[in-house]
Length: 355
Ligand SMILES: NC(=O)c1ccc[n+]([C@@H]2O[C@H](COP(=O)([O-])OP(=O)(O)OC[C@H]3O[C@@H](n4cnc5c(N)ncnc54)[C@H](OP(=O)(O)O)[C@@H]3O)[C@@H](O)[C@H]2O)c1
Image (cartoon, rainbow, N blue to C red; front, side, top):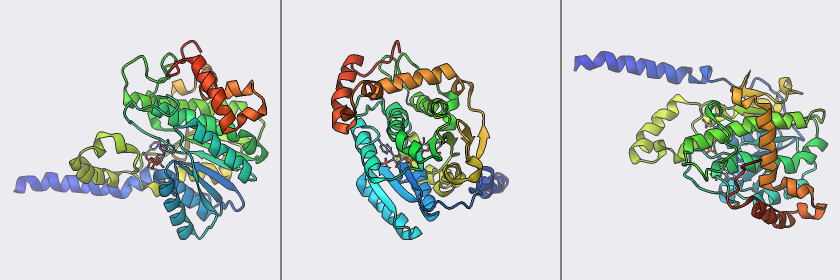
């Protein structure tokens, strides 16, 4: 028995210290006390995880919060909880499925009609390491939801953001971008063997490249855009990974893991910092590791790749096509026809080869 005492107590001490120190070493709270009364914030994927806590914190600071979620029951339950906890009645749930371009267009249209301004757009929603699923429009789900969906949404809200300047766009990227590669010949995993980890990393690299290219294109407009890695946060993001697949891992390993990583409340602090802090005024095109600016991986600094990704993405989501149509085709319905033509032109499953 005694031979176990030393290793067990060493393990216990290390584990205890790790739990106690984790909040300190993984970044603390947003230092800014700024309030945002009268400002409108749109947050995607706000029914759970980092998005929900971001919505709550920004509601506490007085914002008008629009939560864009695919599951209206979960969305309204979260909105109700936030209204109750913050006593801010201006927290709204709106339907947004980022795996459907039609849904994204309907959501954006509603925002444009109902909101006088959009001061902050937080592209938060994400999926990680899911099987080789496709979106409604035939894109790989991780590329489609994490990158293309937010690319389209942001572009559709750009006029509103410009009218509301100074305004801010925040893209939830990830440290995972450092091992990401953009495969322009096969963005949607149709030619090579599907690798779910790499698909996530590609989508997160796309978030950083999109941030940099958008910042360039928005130069002089008063709209800023930055990307952030929120740290490792105990959320539902790992729902498709091994950790959540077996009874043992979800009931034993997962709670143990949760003790070592940040709570969603702390995980939301970096989005809050980028959204409200005075220090972030005018700052654009940067990548933040929690609340510290860092240089992203070399492949995220590739300007030619960023430009090319923008062009490919515009084509895939039908924005290029739309530019050639009159204004009537920008409604969700009008676009649907234009997009169908676009997809037929691009071929099934949208190979981006040659773009
Ligand atoms: N947690 C981390 O350690 C970590 C680390 C680095 C980066 N991030 C990034 O942080 C962001 C937030 O992740 P999280 O950790 O808070 O994950 P989460 O708890 O799984 O929350 C993700 C949110 O995205 C929503 N979503 C997924 N697919 C969607 C779709 N098609 N349309 C609309 N909403 C959709 C989910 O809705 P449902 O509930 O309906 O599925 C959920 O609200 C993600 O972009 C993620 O890549 C997280």
